[in-house]
Length: 353
Image (cartoon, rainbow, N blue to C red; front, side):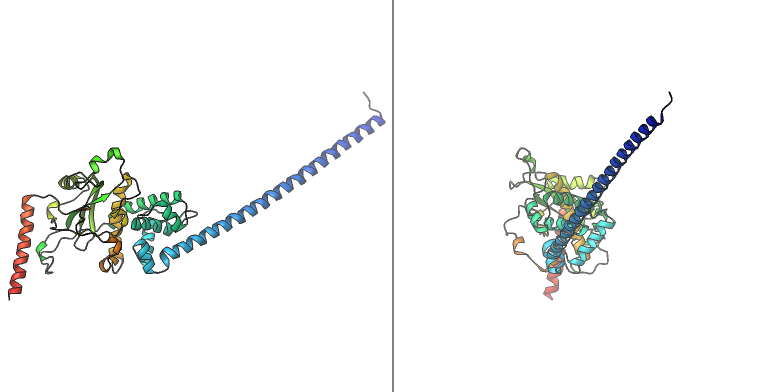
């Protein structure tokens, strides 16, 4: 059908109107989209600025807390985390480089380690640590476990390698123990156990504890620790277990049993009932021993050598937390007694002249 000029003009006019309408809609759509994008950008800018402000405030607060708890002075640091600033920084470096500990978005490595050491040193509840470091409870528990894992992972680095007392030893205290690698001692550490499971953990004095066997060098550093046996377990059983383990005690006949041992506690978490679960305690005990070694090897002077804290004193008749002897063969008991007699006789002859 042939279109008349009038019809063609009407069609063109209608098409132009439609195109114009579509063009207007597109313009409105583009403008609306532009406004939405601008609004999103503005919101993102505002949120980013707010988040950045919150982060800076959080970082500033954590820095102030760390200064108050650690970096204010060596005295402050020793009181709160049991080591001076130099030792603390060195420990953080070791745990970060070789222990795999990492800073998170909100908590740096040094704060993680400080919270861990403060918990060991003072055995405080989680809510107290929350107040001390101005952190929520969940991160504190999580980072405690991370630092504990890092410390225990480096146990070979922190344990002292034993060196026998040489045959030509002339020092009066040690010349009687030639070839000796160290001294064995045991102790009880109180733990929290459900009522229905307490029986095997009950000691002769009725306390709920686990049995800990430790071996120290003559400079009071740990070379081996076995923790986890129930308090009811006999000391000889714990010793046999330590010897029979693949990575346990080596050459046990070179160790001498002390006649009497005093257990020095640097960490309150070992003196009192811990708030941590039973299955975590063996590793916590080992971590305390490893940190004890680190302090003695890193600091020029161990604060415990010249300071006895009032709260750490033990009553003279309170020996329930100490195993004074480890059951041994008659031969080793005789050897120990003979050494004591020889030492006394030499001392007596020296004073007679």
